[in-house]
Image (cartoon, rainbow, N blue to C red):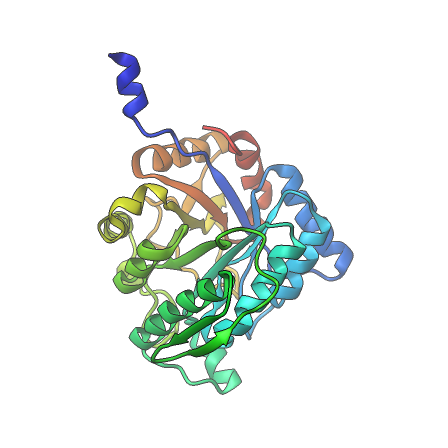
Length: 315
């Protein structure tokens, strides 16, 4: 009887860890950074996608990272859909998946930072339009990664008999990470993502996170939104979030739009010793199924790396 109960219980999901790395002073320094992540037990290096600020361009940076490592997955947090037609991104992503031997984690979002759009002269549509366009982009990406020619006639994109080569190494397609905090974005992620990065809702004007969406209750509510929208596929989704503070509290970096002021009770803020952080991560993994943690700021690597070394790949 006891064995039957144990067999019926879901297996404990292993921890996975990623770090966002934005730039380096040279190719050598970049390679050294990503190799240190790999050696420390991190599962992935992620690069953001903004037109303003001190950040590498994702595709070139991730190609170099893939060439410098053997196990580390490479990905984005996240590609801004509005910056590239999905047919262009599908080609770039498939190439990167081949060059990394199938190690691509494709993070994709609507694009949200108004400063990017203003500086580049891009039209900044309302959130609902951008989410609808992202939904079509996901369909286009997966259609172009499938075998044979693909045709798609949507409101935002039209593809006619396009058969792109190469196809990704990962079949049927690379792992898709969608991040967000609003209900429409979380619903889209619940239906399509392999990994969901839970965050705060962004203001409609693109100036930053909506502080009214912070705190423990709001974070738990997002998990419930995903659970309801995902239905039976919820058990296959990997829930994650960004760790905005680790170890000792620091003043927010000038380049960062993240708001951790009300997030102390959530897994986005991990303060104290390595043992304290490990205990909090285990609580969120065991009680709420949040198992994929992304370090937001390289400054916190010295404090967070011992946590990764202790938990990487384990239960």
